[in-house]
Image (cartoon, rainbow over all chains, first blue to last red; front, top):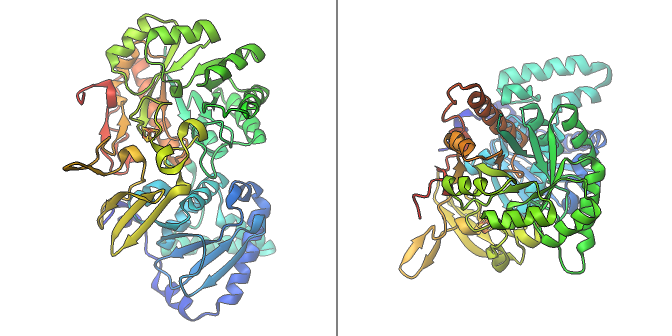
Length: 180
Length: 327
Ligand code: SF4
C-alpha cells in the first residue's frame, strides 16, 4: 500500500451509515446552493476550467456509499448526490479525506495520484483542469459555509472545528507555512 | 553572489506561493499555445499576469514570461501579441525560442530583456554568442544534455548568463527537437506546448492492474501497489526486438542539489526548477529548500542534504547529464 494511505484518515463509519438511508435530494439542493455561492465568490475557479466548463464530473469518495455529480454548467454549478456510480465524463475517486484535503491544499494532488490514493478515469484533461482550478482557488470550505450561515456563522465554524477534531478530516484550509 | 533561484508557476496562487517561499525569480506563461506548458486549467490570462507580476515586484521578485513555442505559419500574430502583452504587464524578461520571434522582439520591443529558452537547444558557445550578437539575448537556458565541464567550457567563452535545470521532470531529447508526442497524438511541445497531452491520456484499472494509454497506445501497465505512471512517451515501456522495458529513459526525475557548488564554480548564474504543472504546495516546498541551499552556499555554511527526496513521489532521482555516467 502507498505511504500516503497511512496518513489519510478514514471517513467515520457513522457518516457512511447515515448516507445509506438519508434522502439525498435535500442534500443535493443544499450542495448546489453552496457551490453557487462558491462560484460567486471565486469566479476564476470556473473560468479556469476553460473548455471543460460544461464537463460533467463524478467525485467518488470511496469510503462513502454515495457519489457527487458536479456539472460546472458555465459557472452556475449543479450538484447531485447519488447512490450509484453516477455518470460524468471524468471520474475522480479516493477517500473523502483525500478529496477534501486536496481542496484545502493539505495534500498534493500529484502525490495522491502517483500513490494511487486518487484514481482518475475518463477525461484526464478535464480532471487535470479541475485539479489546477481548485489548486489556484485556495478555497476554505468552512469559511464559505460560515459565510452562508449569516448570524449562525460563529456556531457553524465551531461545529466544523469540532467535526474536524473528531474525524481527522481536513475541513478548513491550513496555514500555508504549516503545509510547506 | 548568491545564485538565482528561478521557479515555476502554473497559476497565480503558485506564483504567490513561490514568491513567499523565497523565489528570486518566477517564470510563467499565458494561457494559450504560446508557452510550452499549455495544460488544461493552467497559466495566466492577461489580467492575472499583470497582477502576478505586480505582486512579485512588491515582494522583490522578478517574473519571466515564457513564450517559447514555435509560431504556426500564418498565425505569428498570436505569438507577437504575447510579447507585447508581456511587456505591458511589466515582465522582467521574455523567454523565447524561435529566431523569427527573437527578431520581432528585438526590433519592436528593444527594451524588453530577452532570454533564450531551453527549447532553442543552444548547446555550445558559438550558437549562444550568435543569439547574443544578433538578438541581444542576455541569458540562455541550457539544454539538459550537458555535463558540468561542458557548461564550464561554455561559460568561459561567452558573456551571456547561463541558467540550468536543477530539479523536476527530465526531457531526454535535445529540447525543441523531439516530435514523439506528435506521432502519438498530433500535438507536440514545440508547436502546441504539450508533450503527451492529458486530453489524449486514458487510465483503465482492472483488478488492481492499471493501464495508462496515450492516443490509444498502451504506454505503461503497473501492478497493484505500484505507483501510477503518467504516460509521457519517452518514459514509457516499449518492446523492440527481444527487449522490453524503458527503452528511451527510466522514469527518473532530476535532482542536482548536490551539484550546486560545482555549477556555481562552472559560472552558472541561475538554477531553474521544472514544474509549472505542479501544485502550489509542491512548488513552495521545492523553492524553500533550494533557497536554503543557495543561501547556505553563499554564507559558506554546509548545504542541507537530501532535503528533496520526499518530493519525488517514490521516483528515482538522477543528476542527469551533469554527471555523464550513462553515456
Ligand atoms: S517525449 Fe520526452 S523527450 Fe520528447 S518532448 Fe516529451 S518529455 Fe521531452
